[in-house]
Length: 158
Image (cartoon, rainbow, N blue to C red):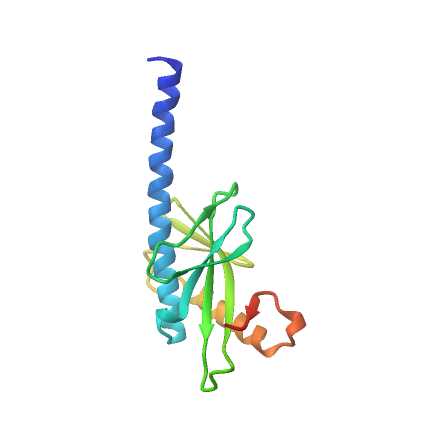
């Protein structure tokens, strides 16, 4: 076997492992987002993903929930994505949205989700994400209750 073939065999094995990890993270992130929609009691149609560029900045490109999550793999080993939640109320002029930059990693049967903090769970445990959902909800309540200058998340009009 040539040195090139030796590296090529390892590269193919590595590529398959990265692809399988990405697929598992897609599945877990979709379940996480669907669970958060259930937690909030809103339809998943109020959720969409925003594409991130290579610098992990949010772009204007959006993908409806149910499509493939537009992940960006960074040097930290996390798959990064942006979740946009649309909030509508009785007044059609008072629509708002919240964009959450999240990261996910799956390794050794543990999923790590990161927003402002890292949160690790065993995804096989029922209600594994409940305390993270609680924290995200409380943070959103605080953000929408605070003056505009204190926002730590990207919040705006639809």
